[in-house]
Length: 252
Image (tube, rainbow, N blue to C red; front, side, top):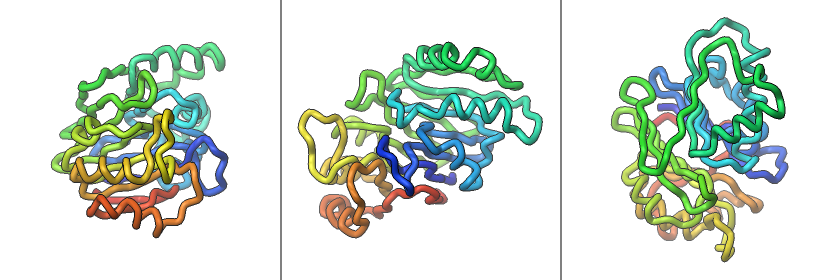
């Protein structure tokens, strides 16, 4: 498996960090996870084969995770350099159909009807689907929004897990058990009561409980001192810690 970070940031405009987006390649699978501002152009910037994208997964419906879906379809409609007939599947929580209906009303039905089949698959917590070959995708509920889901993508013996946005959750940590790579949001240095995001200690506890081999932290609402972040999380988590940044590529 190969992971490329398309966007390691938040809704806050940042010259170095797009909003949330990730690209996974595994055999015939080319999966985009979340589609925040800046991530569509990042597909080309970081050499991701966007024209042969097979799946798009949406974790929840906040704008910094779903805001460029229309732009992605605009690229499929008018920016393709070659012909394509392979299907594309959109995957996400229940309610993604409502989001797509709203985009169609805003931008027109025709934009979302490229010259290849597009299907929509809505998943509930605990469900999984086969992607291609020995690759599959499973989801679990996160305590963030009504619909928000964490995801586990498995190919052979390797797996990449992504929290999306979440509060502290032992259930999500157990869902990520023994994963090769855990991508976790890390919004704050210290917990903010009543705000459904994680801070250093939450991330560390979840990664340790999951016994994740490697941890990538992203989605920062603070200025990042990389060594300080690693030091604080490393107090409770003994695995490898990577600071997520746009363009980071990792083989799993």
